[in-house]
Length: 121
Image (cartoon, rainbow, N blue to C red; front, side, top):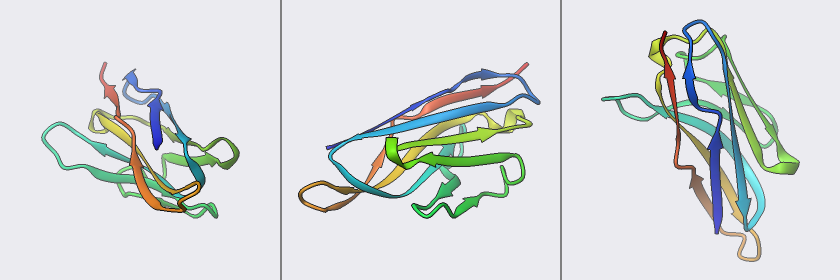
């Protein structure tokens, strides 16, 4: 079993910044890609940023240039820094991990429950 837990959400001011964290735990042999998705009210879930095990990154146009995704492989931790926040960034942010389980070496995709970010003055 693999558990994924996000933190760092809450209320933020327009123009401000936030830093989200995500920790994966459990039966983890290794983690391939890790990423952040978000779902705004009334909209579909979208990929925001992704980072591979080798450190290659991808950003959606909605956050490119004002966000940084990073990871701590030793601690199975993922981060997302988003600057210049606007109300359009209001969403539930979900952490996503591609895990290879210990013992079975089975591949699985593990998601967190999400953390709500509200950008408002």
